[in-house]
Image 1: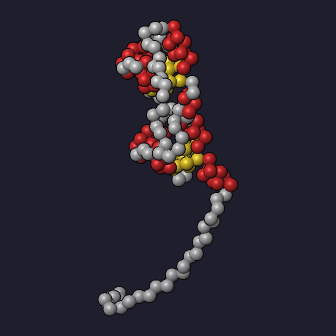
Image 2: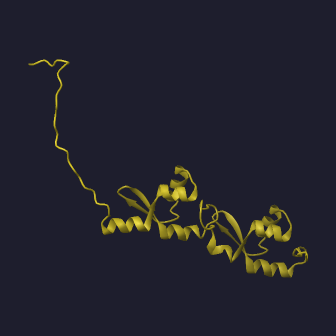
Image 3: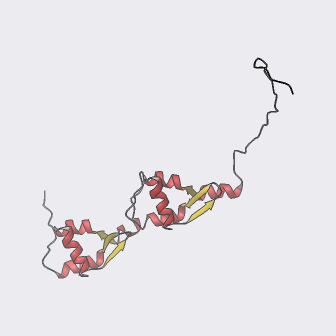
Length: 164
């Protein structure tokens, strides 16, 4: 058994392996990356923390694809979900709820039109004075139904605009 001295150095020469990674993905992987985004990318887009973004994934609001590097969110189903909800807003981009904006009013908009409190608007909703919908936890009032109700009642006149 030989002993090693501290002043001896050993030169080990190992062959250097050169691995060339392709810069482009194969067709399937390329398609997945173009049609999906990571959960982290979705969180950054909506300005959410990690736990809130995985909460959305768990709720199955949109299609999620398990992929070998993690979970991927289908962009088409995400955009379809985004257009039907009002709670989450993109950091930069279009406003949420585009699907319902031209068909419904928010409770805040009705409150401004009637010049009354939020509690009173929700009381009108609760007594079914006009059609309303609960969309992602937000009350939305059907425009046609509201205008019909407004024309039949005389308690709340519409605000008149001042001429300038």
